[in-house]
Image 1 (cartoon, rainbow, N blue to C red):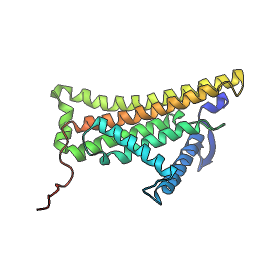
Image 2 (image 1 turned 135 degrees about the vertical axis):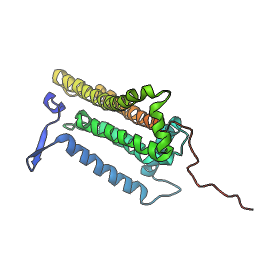
Image 3 (image 1 turned 180 degrees about the vertical axis):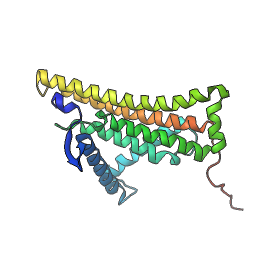
Image 4 (image 1 turned 90 degrees about the vertical axis):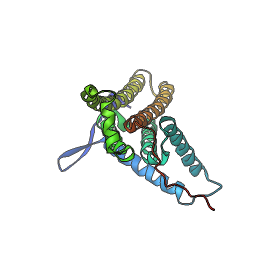
Length: 232
């Protein structure tokens, strides 16, 4: 990728509004993931095919990450955490395609993802811990800390977005400079290293998202499942 292509650029306009390449790539990733999800789940079997195996393995990994953060039933958080992880991993993979950049190199994408996490923290806290217990987390251990806790909600969301944006953009800049200086083959190891960094960033982003949600709960989990009655 050329240096100019590292930064987001307009592909076309809709009603005078420029649509950047990162938006187009995001749409493509969403479509591909939707098709892959349909293909991997349309014929579930006790003897899974490779696509079903891959889906189950990634689901188990996401579930394990959730269980490391909270003792609540992971099924409450799995749709959000799994979707974030798979999207961010796919965003790292597409960067290997010549002429295509990761959508997370556009600050708007990490900000949108961090915004989703910000809203989810409050929704999960309100719904699972209850309004009173959730709001009480802002005044622990003292009411004096209320404004600082509110400010931290905003600053950590911004930090979450900037971390993802900075690591993605810097990685693509390094590869672009190496291509400019040495040709196409030499930067290949750096691209693979960038892919590894992308996977690590996907893990860190989703882990922090789950940690923020767990901190919003702030209390030992309640019995969220219906009580089971033993047969007499």
